[in-house]
Amino acid sequence: PWAPHKLVRYTDSRKDEQERELSIKATPISLVLESLRSKSYVINVLDCPGHVNFSDEVTAALRAVDAVVLVVDAVEGVMNNTERLLKHALQENLPVSVVINKIDRLILELKLPPQDAYYKLVHTLEEINNIIATNTSIHAEEVLRVSPELGNVCFASSLHGWSFTLQSFAKLYSEAHGPSTRS
Image (tube, rainbow, N blue to C red):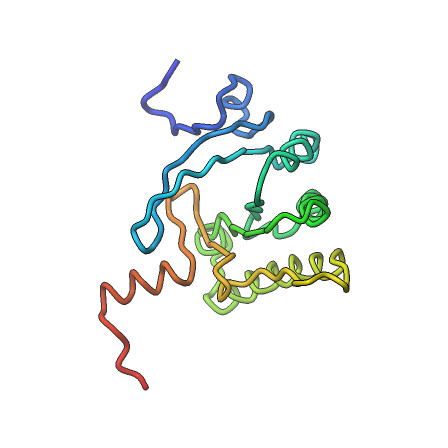
């Protein structure tokens, strides 16, 4: 039954998932999302569990997708299961985007100053790029790299309900403060 006082986690549809607040089975969901240019897209998502005990769900889902959105905890960084999933995605030649989630933990829990938080995020992206470089053929046509400048990295706090890319943040900033006067 639906409890109005409890946070809704739409892809945790099973009772045990709701109680444990984690995904156990891969769950499909369709979303209509709008781009920065106000064009709408239908995106079919397979939400997969991140815990290593449920890695078979992730492996099966990789066979049914066109791209991977790798969600990494900002504090925990790259874990063994993250590396394994990334290697599988590279073996399947899937494009990879990264969401660094729980940015709020860097600020509220660890109380990191901005520069330290920045270096923590850079380190996480460097780890991901090292895994990609190590597991990509030197004969590959194009070497995958994740970077905020390339638009394939998003920063988020699912607890607080926000996310941004460099492009979306720049657009919001520009709309609020006008174009830069620097030359």
